[in-house]
Amino acid sequence: MFGVLETKVKKRNMGFVVGNTFSSWCFTSNIGWSRRGTNWLAWLQNEFQAYILEVSLQYIHRYARYMSSMCFHLTLVYGPDDDEERLSLWDNFARYGSRRAEPSVVFGDFNNITITNERVGGNVPTEANIKPFVHCAMDCG
Figure (cartoon, one colour):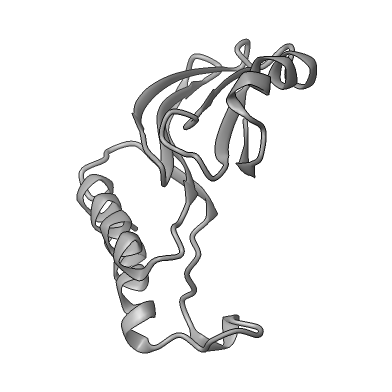
């Protein structure tokens, strides 16, 4: 299973690219939500069963079963650049993450950091920018 972030493949070319690149893979994307670039999540059907739970501009969330045994939640994230939009994302994760019994895998680009020295170049984020992401991670375990 793997994810691809911010592809620049246009909707009309997606079938061609997927058919030639991921011919033996199943995949889903958020093409219906994004004009800036789409995120793709792909998996091998003979190893994973994957069920869509939610798709948005910011994430693709699936419930998966590996080799007919282990179940888990899987979320591919592309965090928005805007602070307010990221707050909405963290609120969503905290709401759903605390209620799950199965393990979760969350991966992607969060467009956020947990401590100021993680940033190289650009504006130094404030505590107000960092704290919501840290609290979300703590709340979700």
